[in-house]
Length: 331
Image (cartoon, rainbow, N blue to C red; front, side, top):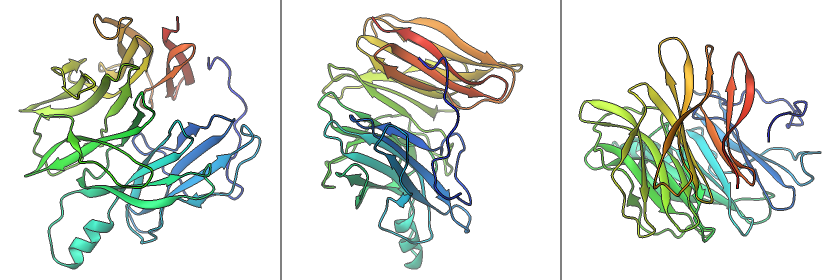
C-alpha cells in the first residue's frame, strides 16, 4: 500500500488565490462506497484569520472533479477554518469547522465570549449540496483540529478542544446527527488546563468494533505538558491516561483495525525527528514500542490510515517526500 504514487493532478478547474495547508489546517480527503472522492479545504480571505470552507467531489474515481462549492450558508467575512470531514455508513458527508460568527455577534453587544464555536453541515446527495449550518457548541478552542470518527453503529462523533468554565481547555465529545438535533456534549479529558491561548494541537479519535473509544490528545497538567492516550469502554468510562513519549512528543494520531491499535507521534531529539509508536495486537491489553520513521529535515504531522492490509503511517518529509510505512500488517 502506497509504495508508488500517481502523477499529481490539479483538482480545481480554476486556480485559487490561496489554500490553507499548514499542519492543523490542511485539505482533507474522504471516500464514498462507489468510487467517490471528496476533498474539503479552507480558502483564506483577504482579512487576516478569515476564510471559507470549500468542497470538491469526483464521482468517477478521480478522473474528473467538480467546481468547488462553499459548504456553509453563512457568508460573513469571519473565521470558517480548521475543517474536518467524514462519511457515514449511509453515504452522508459531514463537514465540521471552527466558526467565529457568535464571537463577532457578542462583540457587537459588548459581551464576553470565550474562544470560537463549532458548526457543521451535512450532504445527503453525495456533495452536490449541503444543509446546515448546525451549531455543535459554543466556546471551542480557536485553532486546534477537530477529530471525526465513526462509531461501530456508523454514527459520526466529533472530539475537539473545548473551553470549559471557568477557563479550562480540555476536550469534549458529541455525536453528530443528520438533522442538527444534538445530544448534550460530554467531557473527554480532565487535565483542567487554564490558559488564554490555543496550542494548535488537536486530538485524534478512533473506535474499535466493540465500541471501545481510543483517543490521543495534547494537554498541560500542572506545569508539565505532554501527549496522552486513553481508551474508554462503550459506556464512556475513561481509563487512566498514559503519557506518550517525552516532553518533545507532539501531534499524535490513533488508528484501529480489528484487534490492532496503533498510536503514533512525532518527537524531536535535537538532531532529527522520529515517528514513534505504541502498537497492540490484542485490543490494548499489551503494547510494544517501535520507531516507524526518522528524518533530519522538515516534516509534516504523522497520519495513520486503517485499511484492509493493516494500519499504515502516511508521512511527508522535506528530504524523503511522501512515505507509506506499515505500522501493523493486517491478519
